[in-house]
Image 1 (cartoon, helix red, strand yellow):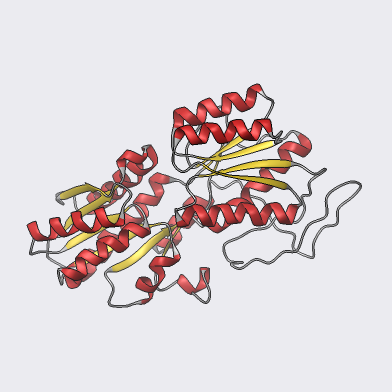
Image 2: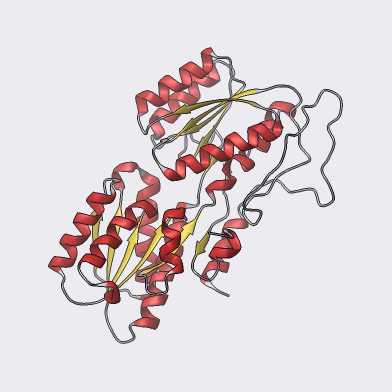
Length: 346
Protein backbone atom coordinates (compact mmCIF):
# COMPACT_ATOMS: atom_id res chain seq x y z
CA UNK A 1 0.00 0.00 0.00
CA UNK A 2 1.34 3.45 -0.91
CA UNK A 3 2.21 6.14 1.63
CA UNK A 4 -0.61 8.27 0.27
CA UNK A 5 -3.19 5.52 0.70
CA UNK A 6 -1.97 4.69 4.20
CA UNK A 7 -2.18 8.37 5.14
CA UNK A 8 -5.71 8.92 3.96
CA UNK A 9 -6.96 5.63 5.42
CA UNK A 10 -5.55 6.47 8.83
CA UNK A 11 -7.11 9.91 8.72
CA UNK A 12 -10.44 8.70 7.39
CA UNK A 13 -10.68 6.20 10.23
CA UNK A 14 -10.92 9.16 12.61
CA UNK A 15 -13.28 11.26 10.57
CA UNK A 16 -16.77 11.89 11.87
CA UNK A 17 -18.39 13.20 8.75
CA UNK A 18 -21.76 13.32 7.10
CA UNK A 19 -22.74 11.08 4.23
CA UNK A 20 -24.38 11.94 0.96
CA UNK A 21 -27.74 10.71 -0.25
CA UNK A 22 -27.28 8.01 -2.83
CA UNK A 23 -30.39 8.65 -4.90
CA UNK A 24 -31.53 12.24 -5.32
CA UNK A 25 -31.83 15.08 -2.86
CA UNK A 26 -34.04 14.85 0.23
CA UNK A 27 -37.01 17.23 0.50
CA UNK A 28 -37.60 19.65 3.39
CA UNK A 29 -40.58 19.05 5.65
CA UNK A 30 -42.72 21.55 7.55
CA UNK A 31 -40.92 24.82 8.18
CA UNK A 32 -37.46 23.59 7.20
CA UNK A 33 -35.39 25.87 4.97
CA UNK A 34 -35.07 24.48 1.42
CA UNK A 35 -31.59 23.86 0.09
CA UNK A 36 -30.07 26.31 -2.33
CA UNK A 37 -28.39 25.55 -5.64
CA UNK A 38 -25.54 23.06 -5.37
CA UNK A 39 -22.47 23.49 -7.53
CA UNK A 40 -19.48 21.49 -6.29
CA UNK A 41 -16.20 22.12 -8.10
CA UNK A 42 -14.24 19.24 -6.56
CA UNK A 43 -16.57 16.24 -6.03
CA UNK A 44 -13.64 13.98 -5.11
CA UNK A 45 -12.99 16.20 -2.09
CA UNK A 46 -16.33 17.51 -0.86
CA UNK A 47 -19.10 15.43 0.73
CA UNK A 48 -22.47 17.19 0.92
CA UNK A 49 -25.07 15.99 3.42
CA UNK A 50 -28.30 16.47 1.52
CA UNK A 51 -30.39 14.90 4.30
CA UNK A 52 -30.08 17.74 6.78
CA UNK A 53 -31.98 21.05 6.69
CA UNK A 54 -32.06 24.16 8.88
CA UNK A 55 -35.26 24.09 10.96
CA UNK A 56 -35.38 27.87 10.87
CA UNK A 57 -33.36 30.83 9.62
CA UNK A 58 -30.30 30.55 11.82
CA UNK A 59 -27.55 33.14 12.01
CA UNK A 60 -23.97 32.00 12.53
CA UNK A 61 -20.71 33.87 12.82
CA UNK A 62 -17.52 32.72 11.13
CA UNK A 63 -14.21 34.29 12.16
CA UNK A 64 -11.49 33.56 9.59
CA UNK A 65 -7.84 33.05 10.52
CA UNK A 66 -6.52 35.69 8.13
CA UNK A 67 -8.11 36.89 4.90
CA UNK A 68 -4.63 37.50 3.46
CA UNK A 69 -3.77 33.80 3.66
CA UNK A 70 -4.85 31.79 0.63
CA UNK A 71 -5.73 28.65 2.61
CA UNK A 72 -7.86 30.75 4.95
CA UNK A 73 -9.62 32.23 1.94
CA UNK A 74 -10.46 28.74 0.67
CA UNK A 75 -11.84 27.75 4.09
CA UNK A 76 -13.86 30.96 4.35
CA UNK A 77 -15.33 30.48 0.88
CA UNK A 78 -16.34 26.91 1.73
CA UNK A 79 -18.25 28.19 4.77
CA UNK A 80 -19.93 30.87 2.65
CA UNK A 81 -20.97 28.32 0.01
CA UNK A 82 -22.27 25.82 2.58
CA UNK A 83 -24.31 28.51 4.36
CA UNK A 84 -25.89 29.54 1.06
CA UNK A 85 -26.79 25.94 0.31
CA UNK A 86 -28.35 25.31 3.73
CA UNK A 87 -30.12 28.69 3.86
CA UNK A 88 -28.17 29.93 6.90
CA UNK A 89 -27.49 33.63 7.48
CA UNK A 90 -23.77 34.24 7.86
CA UNK A 91 -21.66 36.96 9.44
CA UNK A 92 -18.00 36.80 8.33
CA UNK A 93 -15.14 38.23 10.39
CA UNK A 94 -11.37 38.34 9.90
CA UNK A 95 -9.27 37.52 12.98
CA UNK A 96 -6.11 38.65 11.14
CA UNK A 97 -4.07 36.27 13.35
CA UNK A 98 -4.52 38.87 16.08
CA UNK A 99 -5.81 37.70 19.50
CA UNK A 100 -7.32 41.08 20.32
CA UNK A 101 -9.10 41.21 17.00
CA UNK A 102 -10.39 37.67 17.54
CA UNK A 103 -11.93 38.66 20.86
CA UNK A 104 -13.42 41.82 19.37
CA UNK A 105 -14.99 39.82 16.55
CA UNK A 106 -16.61 37.42 18.99
CA UNK A 107 -18.00 40.31 21.01
CA UNK A 108 -19.49 41.82 17.85
CA UNK A 109 -21.08 38.48 16.97
CA UNK A 110 -22.61 38.25 20.45
CA UNK A 111 -24.13 41.71 20.10
CA UNK A 112 -25.49 40.72 16.68
CA UNK A 113 -27.29 37.74 18.24
CA UNK A 114 -25.67 34.87 16.35
CA UNK A 115 -26.93 31.37 17.10
CA UNK A 116 -23.55 29.71 16.61
CA UNK A 117 -19.90 30.69 16.22
CA UNK A 118 -17.09 29.13 14.19
CA UNK A 119 -13.70 30.42 15.29
CA UNK A 120 -10.50 29.94 13.26
CA UNK A 121 -7.69 31.29 15.42
CA UNK A 122 -4.31 29.89 16.47
CA UNK A 123 -4.16 31.19 20.07
CA UNK A 124 -5.51 28.59 22.53
CA UNK A 125 -5.81 30.94 25.51
CA UNK A 126 -7.81 33.52 23.54
CA UNK A 127 -9.93 30.74 22.03
CA UNK A 128 -10.79 29.56 25.54
CA UNK A 129 -11.69 33.10 26.64
CA UNK A 130 -13.83 33.57 23.52
CA UNK A 131 -15.60 30.26 24.09
CA UNK A 132 -16.34 31.19 27.70
CA UNK A 133 -17.75 34.57 26.72
CA UNK A 134 -19.91 32.96 24.05
CA UNK A 135 -21.10 30.29 26.51
CA UNK A 136 -22.04 33.00 29.00
CA UNK A 137 -24.35 34.32 26.30
CA UNK A 138 -25.75 30.91 25.37
CA UNK A 139 -23.86 30.64 22.06
CA UNK A 140 -22.05 27.37 21.21
CA UNK A 141 -18.76 27.38 19.30
CA UNK A 142 -16.61 25.06 17.20
CA UNK A 143 -12.90 25.87 17.26
CA UNK A 144 -11.15 25.34 13.94
CA UNK A 145 -7.60 23.92 13.87
CA UNK A 146 -6.68 25.01 17.44
CA UNK A 147 -8.48 24.02 20.62
CA UNK A 148 -10.43 26.30 22.95
CA UNK A 149 -11.56 24.94 26.35
CA UNK A 150 -10.08 21.45 26.68
CA UNK A 151 -12.70 18.68 26.67
CA UNK A 152 -15.49 21.27 26.49
CA UNK A 153 -15.58 22.90 23.07
CA UNK A 154 -15.68 20.84 19.87
CA UNK A 155 -12.67 21.09 17.58
CA UNK A 156 -12.47 20.66 13.83
CA UNK A 157 -8.80 20.22 13.09
CA UNK A 158 -6.19 18.47 11.04
CA UNK A 159 -4.30 15.51 12.44
CA UNK A 160 -1.08 17.54 12.64
CA UNK A 161 1.06 14.61 13.73
CA UNK A 162 -0.04 12.57 10.74
CA UNK A 163 0.35 15.54 8.36
CA UNK A 164 4.01 15.93 9.26
CA UNK A 165 4.64 12.20 9.20
CA UNK A 166 3.23 11.81 5.68
CA UNK A 167 5.68 14.44 4.44
CA UNK A 168 8.62 12.83 6.21
CA UNK A 169 7.77 9.39 4.87
CA UNK A 170 7.56 10.65 1.30
CA UNK A 171 10.86 12.50 1.67
CA UNK A 172 12.85 9.63 3.09
CA UNK A 173 11.48 7.03 0.70
CA UNK A 174 12.21 9.26 -2.29
CA UNK A 175 15.70 9.99 -0.98
CA UNK A 176 16.52 6.31 -0.52
CA UNK A 177 15.36 5.60 -4.07
CA UNK A 178 17.02 8.61 -5.74
CA UNK A 179 20.27 8.72 -3.77
CA UNK A 180 21.21 5.15 -2.75
CA UNK A 181 24.30 4.94 -0.59
CA UNK A 182 24.36 8.68 0.16
CA UNK A 183 23.62 10.50 3.40
CA UNK A 184 21.29 13.43 2.75
CA UNK A 185 20.59 15.97 5.47
CA UNK A 186 17.16 17.18 6.58
CA UNK A 187 16.26 20.87 6.39
CA UNK A 188 13.10 21.85 8.29
CA UNK A 189 11.43 25.21 7.63
CA UNK A 190 8.81 25.54 10.35
CA UNK A 191 6.94 28.31 12.07
CA UNK A 192 7.08 27.50 15.80
CA UNK A 193 5.95 31.00 16.77
CA UNK A 194 2.52 30.17 15.32
CA UNK A 195 1.81 27.56 17.98
CA UNK A 196 1.64 23.90 18.84
CA UNK A 197 0.05 22.77 15.55
CA UNK A 198 3.06 23.94 13.55
CA UNK A 199 5.54 22.52 16.05
CA UNK A 200 3.78 19.15 15.96
CA UNK A 201 3.92 19.00 12.15
CA UNK A 202 7.64 19.76 12.07
CA UNK A 203 8.52 17.30 14.84
CA UNK A 204 6.49 14.57 13.16
CA UNK A 205 8.23 15.11 9.84
CA UNK A 206 11.59 14.80 11.59
CA UNK A 207 10.52 11.66 13.45
CA UNK A 208 9.32 9.98 10.25
CA UNK A 209 12.66 10.61 8.53
CA UNK A 210 14.65 9.48 11.56
CA UNK A 211 12.69 6.25 11.70
CA UNK A 212 14.34 5.24 8.42
CA UNK A 213 17.54 7.32 8.83
CA UNK A 214 18.32 7.41 12.57
CA UNK A 215 21.59 9.30 12.11
CA UNK A 216 20.29 11.98 9.75
CA UNK A 217 21.55 15.50 10.48
CA UNK A 218 18.68 17.93 11.03
CA UNK A 219 18.83 21.68 10.44
CA UNK A 220 15.88 23.89 11.40
CA UNK A 221 14.87 27.45 10.60
CA UNK A 222 11.77 29.52 11.19
CA UNK A 223 10.08 31.00 8.15
CA UNK A 224 8.35 33.55 10.40
CA UNK A 225 5.42 33.00 8.06
CA UNK A 226 7.16 34.88 5.23
CA UNK A 227 8.16 33.56 1.78
CA UNK A 228 10.96 36.14 1.64
CA UNK A 229 12.36 35.14 5.04
CA UNK A 230 12.13 31.53 3.90
CA UNK A 231 14.02 32.32 0.69
CA UNK A 232 16.81 34.17 2.48
CA UNK A 233 17.31 31.60 5.22
CA UNK A 234 17.27 28.76 2.72
CA UNK A 235 19.84 30.63 0.62
CA UNK A 236 22.03 31.09 3.69
CA UNK A 237 21.81 27.36 4.44
CA UNK A 238 22.71 26.41 0.87
CA UNK A 239 25.68 28.78 0.93
CA UNK A 240 26.91 27.19 4.16
CA UNK A 241 26.34 23.69 2.72
CA UNK A 242 27.45 23.87 -0.92
CA UNK A 243 27.60 20.10 -1.42
CA UNK A 244 25.47 17.07 -0.67
CA UNK A 245 21.86 15.98 -0.96
CA UNK A 246 19.11 17.67 1.03
CA UNK A 247 15.60 16.66 2.06
CA UNK A 248 13.54 19.81 2.70
CA UNK A 249 10.22 20.25 4.47
CA UNK A 250 8.17 23.43 4.70
CA UNK A 251 5.14 24.07 6.88
CA UNK A 252 3.07 25.74 4.13
CA UNK A 253 3.07 25.92 0.34
CA UNK A 254 3.42 29.68 -0.09
CA UNK A 255 6.68 29.67 1.83
CA UNK A 256 7.81 26.63 -0.11
CA UNK A 257 7.92 28.86 -3.18
CA UNK A 258 10.43 31.06 -1.37
CA UNK A 259 12.46 27.96 -0.50
CA UNK A 260 12.32 26.81 -4.12
CA UNK A 261 13.49 30.20 -5.37
CA UNK A 262 16.64 29.88 -3.25
CA UNK A 263 17.25 26.35 -4.50
CA UNK A 264 16.96 27.46 -8.12
CA UNK A 265 19.16 30.51 -7.60
CA UNK A 266 21.86 28.25 -6.17
CA UNK A 267 21.52 25.77 -9.05
CA UNK A 268 20.83 22.96 -6.59
CA UNK A 269 17.66 21.48 -8.07
CA UNK A 270 19.41 18.13 -8.54
CA UNK A 271 20.48 17.99 -4.90
CA UNK A 272 17.13 18.77 -3.28
CA UNK A 273 13.68 17.22 -2.77
CA UNK A 274 10.88 19.14 -1.04
CA UNK A 275 7.58 18.31 0.64
CA UNK A 276 5.11 20.79 2.01
CA UNK A 277 1.68 21.29 3.55
CA UNK A 278 -1.56 22.81 2.30
CA UNK A 279 -2.20 21.65 -1.28
CA UNK A 280 -2.51 25.28 -2.27
CA UNK A 281 -3.01 25.83 -6.02
CA UNK A 282 0.15 27.98 -6.06
CA UNK A 283 2.22 24.80 -5.75
CA UNK A 284 0.41 22.74 -8.39
CA UNK A 285 2.59 23.85 -11.34
CA UNK A 286 5.62 22.50 -9.47
CA UNK A 287 3.92 19.18 -8.81
CA UNK A 288 3.17 18.83 -12.52
CA UNK A 289 6.76 19.61 -13.47
CA UNK A 290 8.76 16.35 -13.46
CA UNK A 291 12.01 18.30 -13.05
CA UNK A 292 10.84 20.24 -9.98
CA UNK A 293 12.36 19.40 -6.56
CA UNK A 294 8.82 19.66 -5.08
CA UNK A 295 7.54 16.08 -4.89
CA UNK A 296 4.41 16.43 -2.73
CA UNK A 297 2.19 18.52 -0.50
CA UNK A 298 -0.20 17.25 2.16
CA UNK A 299 -3.81 18.21 1.50
CA UNK A 300 -6.13 18.96 4.39
CA UNK A 301 -8.78 19.60 1.73
CA UNK A 302 -9.67 23.10 2.90
CA UNK A 303 -12.42 23.19 0.28
CA UNK A 304 -14.52 20.82 2.39
CA UNK A 305 -14.27 22.52 5.80
CA UNK A 306 -17.53 24.47 5.52
CA UNK A 307 -19.37 21.45 4.16
CA UNK A 308 -18.26 19.38 7.15
CA UNK A 309 -18.94 22.12 9.70
CA UNK A 310 -22.45 23.19 8.70
CA UNK A 311 -24.09 19.77 9.27
CA UNK A 312 -22.44 19.66 12.72
CA UNK A 313 -23.84 23.13 13.47
CA UNK A 314 -27.33 22.31 12.18
CA UNK A 315 -27.61 19.05 14.12
CA UNK A 316 -26.67 20.95 17.27
CA UNK A 317 -29.12 23.79 16.64
CA UNK A 318 -31.95 21.59 15.35
CA UNK A 319 -31.79 18.69 17.79
CA UNK A 320 -29.28 19.58 20.51
CA UNK A 321 -26.79 16.97 19.26
CA UNK A 322 -23.44 18.43 20.22
CA UNK A 323 -20.57 17.80 17.76
CA UNK A 324 -17.84 15.35 18.76
CA UNK A 325 -15.00 16.88 20.73
CA UNK A 326 -12.70 16.27 17.78
CA UNK A 327 -13.56 15.95 14.08
CA UNK A 328 -10.69 15.28 11.69
CA UNK A 329 -10.87 15.94 7.95
CA UNK A 330 -9.12 13.38 5.74
CA UNK A 331 -5.54 13.91 4.63
CA UNK A 332 -3.62 12.78 1.57
CA UNK A 333 -0.28 13.61 0.01
CA UNK A 334 -0.82 15.28 -3.36
CA UNK A 335 1.73 14.37 -6.02
CA UNK A 336 1.83 14.53 -9.79
CA UNK A 337 0.23 11.06 -9.82
CA UNK A 338 -3.03 11.98 -8.05
CA UNK A 339 -3.30 15.76 -8.54
CA UNK A 340 -5.80 15.48 -11.40
CA UNK A 341 -8.02 13.07 -9.45
CA UNK A 342 -8.54 15.53 -6.61
CA UNK A 343 -8.21 18.76 -8.58
CA UNK A 344 -9.30 18.10 -12.17
CA UNK A 345 -8.32 20.81 -14.60
CA UNK A 346 -5.62 22.27 -12.35
